[in-house]
Amino acid sequence: MKIAFVIYRYFPYGGLQRDMAAAALNAVSRGHSVTVLCAEWESEEIPGVAVEILPTSGFTNHGRMLAFSRQVRERLGKSDFDRSLMFNRMGGGDFYFAADNCLLTGWRRSHSATARRLLPRYRTFLALEKAVMSPTSQTRIFALTKTQIADYRHCYGTPENRFILLPPGVMADFRRPAEAEAAAIRSAKRRELGIAEDALTLIQVAASFHTKGVDRACAAFAELKKIRPDARFLVVGPDRPLKRPGVDFLGGRTDVPALLLTADLMIHPARCEATGGVLTESLSAGTPPLTVATCGYAPLVADIAPELVLPEPFDQNSFNAALLATVGRLNEYKTRTACYGWSHDLGHRTSEIVDELEKGILL
Image: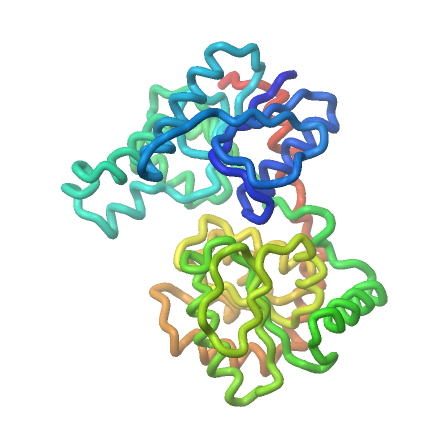
């Protein structure tokens, strides 16, 4: 088949972008032809995948996204693609990968009905979401959690049979290797980063620091440093570093699996997180995560220990205390996490996406 993957911006460090690349590579491995339609491409090529940059203009983010959606509709209308898979909210696709939670659900809590109706940003993005979720749309929806499905159905009346619930999608290189190899990787990476073998090391991986609560994590780390001055905190992601003393901002990295083996604990107090793919990556690596209930995959962490998931609303003092308590039981949590990662299959999302593309769009 000829398949169009549609994404506004591609860069190598985002979770959505990694999901797209993995699905594209899986489709190519099965003999399909994949073309990525995008407005911005900030990476090396994906082997075997064609890239087509559509000219998009506008003075605002919502204006550019609306222009991009129109360009995509026009391009698909003139093509002979057999399937199209959208990775951003917009109508006209055969499938949509719902990486984010329902906008209308969130904005009903934070913005008035007048603001949603009159302000161009909210009006535009909600219209793009409605174009996908409307009962009259034929787009099939790859959902990542049951909560997403419930929210979309409540807001838009989307028929249940249009949703396909996907499992987590951890790539194979995140799976913890044999202990001797894991220990060797940890030691080598610690030498590279100048971290002592016995230094307590925390990590957070995030493309958007504010959304993923890096400031919250830094505040908790500052309290930890008072009793563990040897502790290190590695923040991995392409966002602008915060001004936080003692925190190592490493920028975007391609060696995240090795960095997870290097760390003793993942912390992820996100403000908004449809799933939290970094949590499943951490579980696969055997690195225990401390997180919050707003993350869609928080129940997987709670399977290891409920106390590793803090309830909403977020309270900084409670998170600080939870971090100190977790460090005190770290060996226990490491053992539990390693066992969980080995006994649970967390990596079949990509193959299921391509399976559904091959089945077609018949409801």
